Image 1 (cartoon, one colour):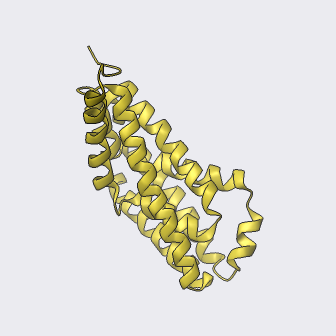
Image 2 (tube, helix red, strand yellow; image 1 turned 90 degrees about the vertical axis):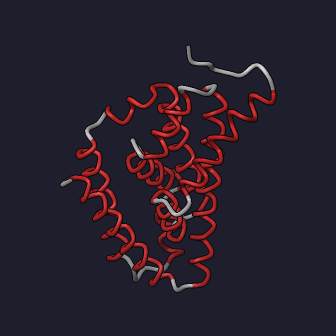
Length: 199
Protein backbone atom coordinates (compact mmCIF):
# COMPACT_ATOMS: atom_id res chain seq x y z
CA UNK A 1 0.00 0.00 0.00
CA UNK A 2 1.30 3.47 -0.95
CA UNK A 3 2.14 5.64 2.05
CA UNK A 4 0.62 9.14 1.91
CA UNK A 5 2.45 10.88 4.78
CA UNK A 6 5.34 9.65 6.94
CA UNK A 7 4.95 9.35 10.70
CA UNK A 8 8.14 11.15 11.79
CA UNK A 9 10.16 14.26 10.96
CA UNK A 10 13.26 12.33 9.81
CA UNK A 11 11.04 10.33 7.45
CA UNK A 12 9.52 13.58 6.13
CA UNK A 13 12.98 15.01 5.47
CA UNK A 14 14.26 11.87 3.79
CA UNK A 15 11.18 11.54 1.59
CA UNK A 16 11.24 15.19 0.48
CA UNK A 17 15.00 15.77 0.05
CA UNK A 18 15.39 12.78 -2.30
CA UNK A 19 13.00 14.11 -4.98
CA UNK A 20 14.19 17.67 -4.37
CA UNK A 21 17.82 16.80 -5.11
CA UNK A 22 17.04 14.53 -8.05
CA UNK A 23 14.63 16.94 -9.75
CA UNK A 24 16.82 20.00 -9.09
CA UNK A 25 19.79 18.30 -10.76
CA UNK A 26 17.72 16.93 -13.66
CA UNK A 27 16.04 20.24 -14.51
CA UNK A 28 19.13 22.47 -14.74
CA UNK A 29 19.39 23.55 -18.38
CA UNK A 30 16.26 21.58 -19.30
CA UNK A 31 13.70 22.94 -21.77
CA UNK A 32 11.41 24.19 -18.98
CA UNK A 33 14.19 26.45 -17.68
CA UNK A 34 14.85 27.73 -21.21
CA UNK A 35 11.14 28.46 -21.64
CA UNK A 36 11.11 30.41 -18.35
CA UNK A 37 14.21 32.38 -19.32
CA UNK A 38 12.86 33.27 -22.76
CA UNK A 39 9.39 34.25 -21.55
CA UNK A 40 10.81 36.34 -18.69
CA UNK A 41 13.06 38.20 -21.13
CA UNK A 42 9.97 39.23 -23.07
CA UNK A 43 7.24 39.59 -20.43
CA UNK A 44 6.74 40.55 -16.80
CA UNK A 45 8.45 37.95 -14.65
CA UNK A 46 5.90 37.32 -11.87
CA UNK A 47 3.12 35.98 -14.14
CA UNK A 48 5.69 33.82 -15.94
CA UNK A 49 6.89 32.30 -12.66
CA UNK A 50 3.33 31.90 -11.32
CA UNK A 51 2.15 30.14 -14.49
CA UNK A 52 5.17 27.86 -14.51
CA UNK A 53 4.82 26.89 -10.85
CA UNK A 54 1.07 26.28 -11.27
CA UNK A 55 1.77 23.96 -14.21
CA UNK A 56 4.40 22.03 -12.24
CA UNK A 57 2.06 21.73 -9.25
CA UNK A 58 -0.57 20.16 -11.49
CA UNK A 59 1.95 17.89 -13.22
CA UNK A 60 3.37 16.69 -9.90
CA UNK A 61 -0.13 16.09 -8.55
CA UNK A 62 -0.93 13.94 -11.57
CA UNK A 63 2.40 12.15 -11.24
CA UNK A 64 2.02 11.18 -7.60
CA UNK A 65 -1.68 10.37 -8.03
CA UNK A 66 -1.43 8.13 -11.04
CA UNK A 67 2.14 6.88 -11.00
CA UNK A 68 4.24 5.95 -13.98
CA UNK A 69 1.17 5.14 -16.09
CA UNK A 70 0.69 8.90 -16.55
CA UNK A 71 3.05 8.98 -19.52
CA UNK A 72 0.70 6.66 -21.43
CA UNK A 73 -2.37 8.92 -21.18
CA UNK A 74 -1.57 10.77 -24.39
CA UNK A 75 0.41 9.09 -27.19
CA UNK A 76 3.99 10.41 -27.12
CA UNK A 77 3.96 11.36 -30.81
CA UNK A 78 0.76 13.39 -30.45
CA UNK A 79 2.14 15.18 -27.40
CA UNK A 80 5.42 15.90 -29.23
CA UNK A 81 3.48 17.30 -32.20
CA UNK A 82 1.50 19.63 -29.94
CA UNK A 83 4.72 20.79 -28.23
CA UNK A 84 6.40 21.39 -31.60
CA UNK A 85 3.45 23.44 -32.88
CA UNK A 86 3.25 25.49 -29.68
CA UNK A 87 6.98 26.27 -29.60
CA UNK A 88 7.17 26.96 -33.34
CA UNK A 89 4.24 29.39 -33.17
CA UNK A 90 5.75 31.29 -30.26
CA UNK A 91 9.21 31.28 -31.88
CA UNK A 92 7.83 32.76 -35.10
CA UNK A 93 5.87 35.39 -33.15
CA UNK A 94 9.02 36.41 -31.28
CA UNK A 95 11.05 36.70 -34.48
CA UNK A 96 8.39 38.69 -36.31
CA UNK A 97 8.00 41.08 -33.36
CA UNK A 98 11.72 41.41 -32.70
CA UNK A 99 11.68 45.11 -33.53
CA UNK A 100 9.10 45.95 -30.89
CA UNK A 101 10.29 47.55 -27.70
CA UNK A 102 10.22 45.15 -24.72
CA UNK A 103 8.28 47.60 -22.57
CA UNK A 104 5.58 47.95 -25.22
CA UNK A 105 5.26 44.17 -25.49
CA UNK A 106 4.94 43.85 -21.72
CA UNK A 107 2.09 46.33 -21.58
CA UNK A 108 0.22 44.64 -24.46
CA UNK A 109 -0.19 41.38 -22.57
CA UNK A 110 -2.17 41.18 -19.36
CA UNK A 111 -0.82 39.31 -16.34
CA UNK A 112 -3.53 36.72 -16.95
CA UNK A 113 -2.41 36.23 -20.57
CA UNK A 114 1.24 35.85 -19.60
CA UNK A 115 0.30 33.43 -16.80
CA UNK A 116 -1.77 31.33 -19.20
CA UNK A 117 0.98 31.28 -21.84
CA UNK A 118 3.58 30.07 -19.34
CA UNK A 119 1.15 27.57 -17.79
CA UNK A 120 0.18 25.97 -21.11
CA UNK A 121 3.73 25.85 -22.47
CA UNK A 122 5.11 24.12 -19.39
CA UNK A 123 2.09 21.84 -18.98
CA UNK A 124 2.27 20.51 -22.54
CA UNK A 125 6.06 20.45 -22.79
CA UNK A 126 6.62 18.61 -19.50
CA UNK A 127 3.73 16.09 -19.65
CA UNK A 128 5.36 12.66 -19.58
CA UNK A 129 8.85 14.19 -19.29
CA UNK A 130 11.64 12.24 -17.57
CA UNK A 131 11.27 14.34 -14.41
CA UNK A 132 7.56 13.67 -14.13
CA UNK A 133 8.10 9.94 -14.63
CA UNK A 134 10.82 10.02 -11.93
CA UNK A 135 8.42 11.77 -9.52
CA UNK A 136 5.75 9.18 -10.30
CA UNK A 137 8.24 6.38 -9.65
CA UNK A 138 9.37 7.86 -6.33
CA UNK A 139 5.74 8.22 -5.23
CA UNK A 140 5.33 4.45 -5.51
CA UNK A 141 8.10 3.78 -2.96
CA UNK A 142 8.18 6.96 -0.81
CA UNK A 143 5.37 8.82 1.02
CA UNK A 144 3.38 10.75 -1.56
CA UNK A 145 3.03 14.19 0.10
CA UNK A 146 6.76 14.78 0.82
CA UNK A 147 7.61 13.60 -2.72
CA UNK A 148 5.17 16.16 -4.14
CA UNK A 149 6.55 18.92 -1.89
CA UNK A 150 10.20 18.13 -2.66
CA UNK A 151 9.67 17.90 -6.42
CA UNK A 152 7.55 21.06 -6.55
CA UNK A 153 10.09 23.07 -4.53
CA UNK A 154 12.89 21.91 -6.83
CA UNK A 155 10.96 22.86 -9.97
CA UNK A 156 10.03 26.22 -8.44
CA UNK A 157 13.72 26.88 -7.72
CA UNK A 158 14.87 26.01 -11.26
CA UNK A 159 12.02 28.04 -12.76
CA UNK A 160 12.90 31.06 -10.59
CA UNK A 161 16.53 30.80 -11.73
CA UNK A 162 15.36 30.70 -15.35
CA UNK A 163 13.17 33.78 -14.82
CA UNK A 164 16.04 35.61 -13.09
CA UNK A 165 18.39 34.76 -15.95
CA UNK A 166 15.80 36.06 -18.43
CA UNK A 167 15.45 39.37 -16.60
CA UNK A 168 19.23 39.83 -16.43
CA UNK A 169 19.50 39.00 -20.11
CA UNK A 170 17.01 41.75 -20.93
CA UNK A 171 19.05 44.30 -18.96
CA UNK A 172 22.35 43.42 -20.68
CA UNK A 173 21.27 42.77 -24.26
CA UNK A 174 19.12 44.98 -26.54
CA UNK A 175 15.48 43.85 -26.55
CA UNK A 176 15.54 43.25 -30.32
CA UNK A 177 18.42 40.78 -29.93
CA UNK A 178 16.71 39.07 -26.97
CA UNK A 179 13.57 38.51 -29.06
CA UNK A 180 15.63 37.12 -31.94
CA UNK A 181 17.54 34.73 -29.68
CA UNK A 182 14.31 33.72 -27.93
CA UNK A 183 12.61 33.03 -31.26
CA UNK A 184 15.50 30.86 -32.41
CA UNK A 185 15.50 28.97 -29.09
CA UNK A 186 11.78 28.22 -29.37
CA UNK A 187 12.21 27.05 -32.98
CA UNK A 188 15.08 24.81 -31.86
CA UNK A 189 12.87 23.32 -29.13
CA UNK A 190 10.14 22.81 -31.75
CA UNK A 191 12.61 21.00 -34.03
CA UNK A 192 13.71 18.80 -31.13
CA UNK A 193 10.07 17.92 -30.37
CA UNK A 194 9.55 17.03 -34.04
CA UNK A 195 12.31 14.42 -33.83
CA UNK A 196 10.11 12.59 -31.28
CA UNK A 197 7.13 12.74 -33.69
CA UNK A 198 9.02 10.92 -36.45
CA UNK A 199 11.00 8.54 -34.18
